[in-house]
Length: 266
Image: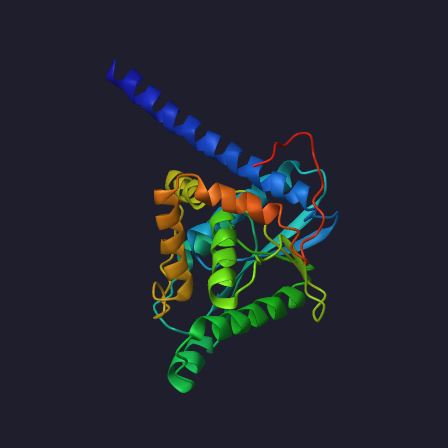
């Protein structure tokens, strides 16, 4: 009897895991189909920070690779900022398990920003340098696209930051062509919410690596994230409405979305 109960509990856990995986594939495929993110023969570099978003994307794209009608290859790339205390062995183990080639790019971006330049607002410069290192390695590995792990909440945060700090309505597009390098950036997790991703990461016990960045948690983005959640607590459903406003906002550099009867509007 005890063995039967334990077996039932295990089965429920496995079923719950499978449901989370199916949900992940469904949301990811919806974004990919809506904005035609993937073409036949693509080689896609996945930017892996070690956080929950990028690790979830490893699972999403590897899962889709098995049944998506267009064939594509994957490469996982981590940019090490040179801040020390940054062990990615568990992430490498996950990539090995998923059969995704994994490369770590060693840089001195952290010491340059914090020790040499003493940047007061380091995030913008760090992002530029990190993306530059990622792009260069992606090109070296023969990739033509780069996948970022931005989700719905990131999109809304970016829109709020644009309103608050720059005075205009803007959010990063689902697909961005980088003219200088010829690479295309795609964001396959745009229909995923942060709670969705947190739930998936817990169910799969993903080896999330804590960021060694000294500015982590003390940035404009962190302030905006807290503000967004406060607005949503006081006005339930506000994040969903802001997301819909972005999708319907006719933002200048957004690609045309492809209507698909399989999907309903968010």
